[in-house]
Image (cartoon, rainbow, N blue to C red; front, side, top):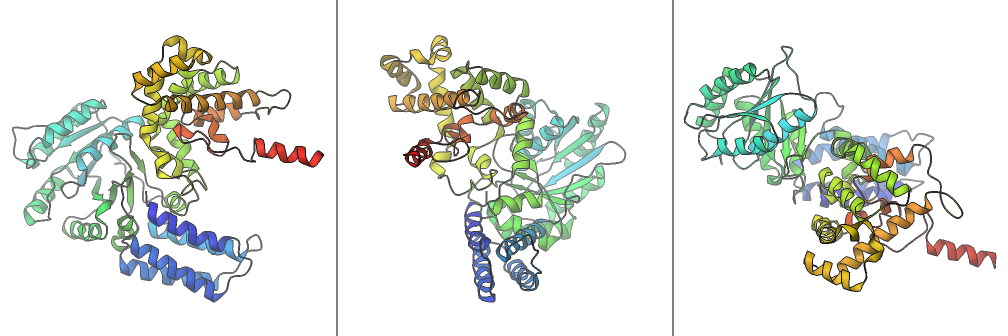
Length: 490
């Protein structure tokens, strides 16, 4: 998300980070570059102007703390200013809960913004948190809208109420509320109709629904890919029926980020959730500081750990870790790791959460199809071959490649990745020339390792199918490192 903007701002702040002395000319040049980066990202011009002005004043009048170089202090100011632009302090961005124990959420938005899928995503997120939600479709205009919601809700095991025969949206909303209370649900999510343009008829219908169910939260679902137009849509809905916040969708696409960066400052309403993909799991609460860190290439380890905790089967991950540490690691375990990783989201999204990783790995190496291809290769093996990979000779590899519809070289790459991981695990068992596992490391990596190939510890090598990189010096120490040491002894 925000790939183009993130790359530009990361490069801009990187120039300042190591400076021991920052001049007015440096600040002026940096602000010019930031202004251009934000405008190219389709951020509202007024927002950009105010943002750059406020940040310039802070940079010129900042007292540099003793623990920072001036350059680092400037980077901190950029980060804090971006956090404030996105929403500032956390708290108001949380979902409101009704004191009655029954919370009603109405989702508004234009047609195509993703309201129906977002309703189910939000319901599944609440269900994971131990809540009992029900989704209701009051879209009586779009053909099969109610049926689409029902199919999606059934696929994730969420209660759903629809009435395809009724053409009165307000009556359906009332009936849906009654059904949810009868079934002892504590959340009701209402999926409303949308239009390609905002009109009086739509607004009158939405006001009627709101009056009928008295919602706890009125959330506008906004397509982030429409840029500044999203701000105009938000202002229209705010003036007509009032909003409590936003859900930004399609942040995984080629969106330039302008809507997310503009909408909070102009409307004064917080972004509550973001959707980063089409899958029903691709929704997460919005945290301004974490998003600012991602945009600036500082990573978001907290969200990465939370993703792992929510999606990774801890018991299965622990079993895999134990097998890896006891030299019993095989291709069944690698397949299990790929499965766990796919549950956490796209490779691009995961790598974006790793500090310093953004922009250093090409998009072609982060293609999720690579993981699917590798899983297909393992699936084409016999049970014996998966459990004893050492028997995979040339003829077996050729047969496996044909079965998976790939080249033999793809099978060889997968085996190289597996062998590197197995070798690393042997080193970490301790013993002569090896590395012992720090206390608690196994449990920590079982959370994370279930979602990524363990050889990622060596410069991200083999991450979920990315091309292995050459060994370099690092925490483990590569071949080049050892050669240098030998030269020094001579």
